[in-house]
Image (cartoon, rainbow, N blue to C red; front, side, top):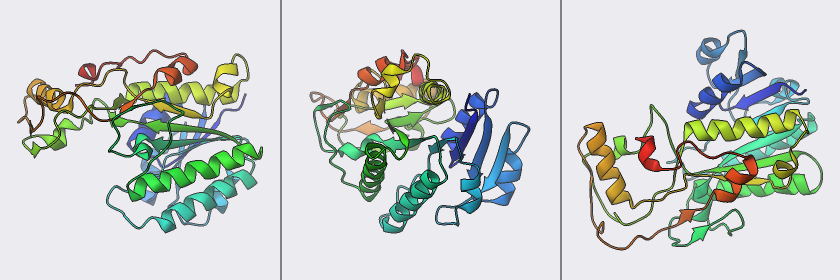
Length: 281
């Protein structure tokens, strides 16, 4: 059984995943400071100082026959991402050279752009608009090219907007005046994301009953319901007891993209516990 897991980018999502996998896997988790590396290290998790662009030698020493969860975001406000993309591709190539067993890349549904109004399944074309989305598309394509050439096993996981018990987008929207209240929302709860990632990681550890998972390289993780954001965030603020945002166009017919994740959940054999965004509040 392959029980080596490297989480490259041990942020909010990484901490939830590390806690969930610590009983079954030996985990190396990268962080950018020595202080944080020491803080996260225990008998199950070893913190490793690594920043994107650093020499990868020490990191790659841990990657042989390991599952690598690659979760390094570029930063929302960064619009110059050529170096970020190049460094990610270099890290991936070095991981492959180190004989990593599988790469699970945490991507984003923003690769579809923000101006679409259709239902988007895993076969929909990407139309990235932001620098971050364009970088993610480039990294995805590089990984898929490596997969096609039998260089490494690859899984790409496109996440909708992440929520959790200590994180919900309504907190940053509280009291604001916003447009497009009729746009649909696409959210996913950290509990369901961890369940999906655990399934993919264990599928790498054992080839028993993994034919469905092995049949695809791309997954959507998103709730199954998509209310209008004006309605949803107003109700969410009221439930949380914070100042509600106000939206224009909330009374118009729903519009905006819908991330269809039904096929992905079915392949994973998971019915998300937070299929309804109301349950995420």
